[in-house]
Amino acid sequence: MPAKKSKEITEELRHGVKPYTLKKGEKFMNKKQRTHFNLILSNWKEEIEEELERTVHHIQDEVLNLPDPTDRASQETDMSLELRSRDRERKLLKKINEAVERIESEEYGYCEKCGEEIGVKRLEARPTAELCIDCKTLDEIREKQMV
Image (tube, rainbow, N blue to C red):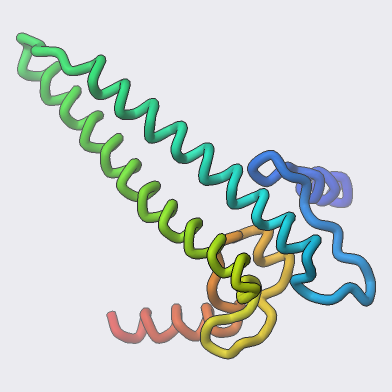
């Protein structure tokens, strides 16, 4: 049964794109891989922008002057949570745009700290990744020590 579950995970679409199948001996971050990740990032960006647009319309349409203070407080809480989520998405859009720029400059897929390959599987999981797993782990350890 675990083998079947693993197969299901690998066939899952990432923002409408099938995972990249790395071929033996294939050069890392070749044109085909860059095109693949550019498509993932573009689709992801489009999804976020559509959600942002829906939120704007939702907020404009849902502004009601509710007479009950409890209902009004609930509506304000909902709006606050919605706006906080959209703020995180705006920050994510910035990271997506930076990743697209790295693809265009052929710097995508390489760790910004050590210059090593980030890896296709890590990029599939986190297309905006800027650090390899080793550097990211070290950063997280340092961050925990500072707290």
